[in-house]
Image 1: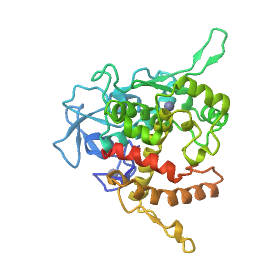
Image 2 (image 1 turned 135 degrees about the vertical axis):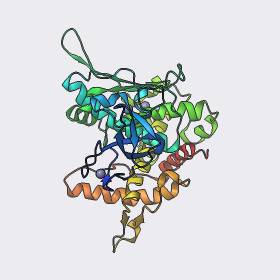
Image 3 (image 1 turned 45 degrees about the vertical axis):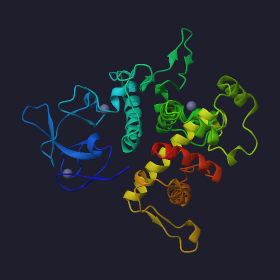
Image 4 (image 1 turned 90 degrees about the vertical axis):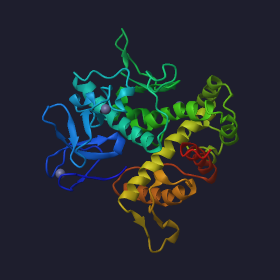
Amino acid sequence: MRLFRCDNCGNAVYFENRSCVSCGFRLAFVPEALAVHTVQLDADGKRWRRLDQQQFVYRFCANEKWDLCNWMVPAESQEDYCVACRHNGLVPDPATENGLRRWRRIADAQRLLFYSFLRWDLPRPTRAEDPEGGLLFDLKDDEILPDGSCQPVLIGHDEGHIVIRTAEADDPTREQQRAMMNEPYRTLLGHFRHECGHFIWNRMVRDAGKLDSFRAVFGDERADYGEALDKHYKEGPPPLWGETFISYYATTHPWEDFAECFAHVLHIVDSLETAHIYGIALAPPSHSELRAHAAFDPYTILDFDQIAEVWIPLSVALNSIHHSMGERDLYPFILTPAIQAKLKYVHGLLTRQV
Ligand SMILES: [Zn+2]
Ligand SMILES: [Zn+2]
Ligand SMILES: [Zn+2]
């Protein structure tokens, strides 16, 4: 993620900011510009103008009324919602305290997801544009059964239809789930990125005629998915799975392996962009093997090896910093050469090289 500047006073401002802490001017993310800009309400009391480029006129996304979204829609657009929110189907009830709190956390993750989609211009049709396979998010509450017990929502993907469990916006619930599944990492953003990995597979592998190159890297996805899942939960992962799979879950089936790798390419590239924008460089005097400098914008880099070369030492350093704060690893994954080859394939696909 980038850093931005207030167009009024020049203060540093961030992706999530609603107003400048220094001058108080209103801020908004303008998807077309891929940037946060300072905006000013027009005399009509409805439209907003960019302070730096007065000819650009916008409305806020309709979810702004709940302070759920700070993204803009061009004033002339027919759409009520921004490019991220217009993919929502079911949403939590914003009139309830729980619903609004959860939805805000989910919306924060959703906009980070869309930032990467916009940077690479990844396919993102809505259901209106593609009723069969467009991208649709149902943010679902757990069901309370007649006997009072709770039926947790299953997170998942089916032909562009993605279900996100709103209860996981609550830290205790998500942490409990993480521990139960024995996962090293579990976040809302991770869910969004993983589930969208399945959608991207449909669009950029299956529908794009790239099954042969996919199978050469990830194996044959025609293996029965239900059986694979059963086997996974009964027998556990294959021995030495960490050599070739980024996560335990990735061992289940080539589809899951791809979705996990897609999520990781987004984790890595977006985190590295942040390191780049801050000019972060590592130069431990006695460990030259851990030297690294994020000297490039990773969203524009075509060679994934270059990205991995910086990301690996950077993630080691970030993990060490987390340990110093008594926290677990920030990035609890090991990128072996075999795993890097899979990430490289996914990255090649996103940058239209495959
Ligand atoms: Zn300012
Ligand atoms: Zn929005
Ligand atoms: Zn999956």
